[in-house]
Amino acid sequence: MIPLDPQQAAARAWFEALRDRICATFEAIEREAGSDAAFAYTPWNREDDPDARGGGGVRGVMKGRVFEKVGVNVSTVGGSFAPDFAQTIHGAGDNPTFVATGISLVAHLANPHAPAVHMNTRFLTTTKRWFGGGADLNPPLPYAEDTDAFHATLRAACEAHAPIGDYPRYAQWAEEYFAIPHRGVRRGVGGIFYDHLDADGDAFDLAFAFTRAVGEAFLAIYPAIVRRRRDTPFTPDEERQMLAWRGRYAEFNLVYDRGTLFGLKTGGNIDAILMSLPPRAIWE
Image 1 (cartoon, one colour):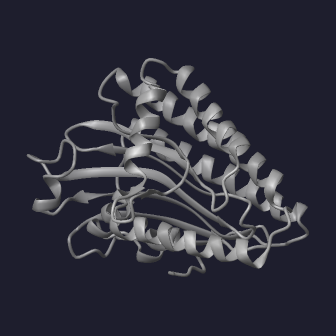
Image 2 (image 1 turned 180 degrees about the vertical axis):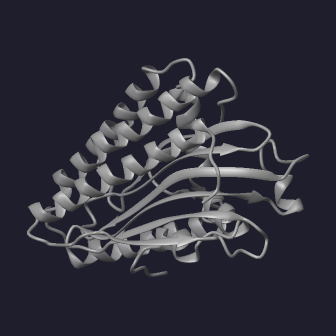
């Protein structure tokens, strides 16, 4: 176990508590659908890492009737970035040591009318301290009602924490980040994305409060959308569209996603890092 200061410990406790609430809600949705699916939790650690990087986490995965595959991971890791990679990390250019704690979630639904989703929030300590994260909705078959509700909930969370909760900026950031340049398309219908939200000194409390609000907003809106769409009849052609869309999603996560790169560069658990990949996909 790596040593944590009070701020790091508080962030870790929140991420783990949020994980528990999200997983309980998703399991409840499975029960409502007549399924007994539950999360399987697999701890992992890096105490024997040859590069003297410590910490670990817990990978949680559920495969059910509603959620074809959903992963909810928490981790707290520390050590030193490799020299070249350190130059790309905020505050690590002159001193590569770090501590990172966070939650990461990706859900792929069995019904193509029910949207996939990604959410993560994290707290990093280098020579700087900052929060980052966000959430974005990824429907194979978009509904304006769902898109509007998702954005409205995130907008309200941001506006309640203005000025650091800058919804126009974070929504635009998501538009730019969650894109697949080589395909010329976006990954989904957007959401918010933020990074390097200053948490040094007195800024910690405000940044942490906003990050908690993002988690609460996700928990408030996404299960409601799933319940709305999970029983919608679908055709074989609509399922094919979903599988082709998942291929695009996999391309983004393997080529562009920063979280995937961060995990691989810092000796994270491979299965946890790649839990975002869909259980089935096609390329056409």
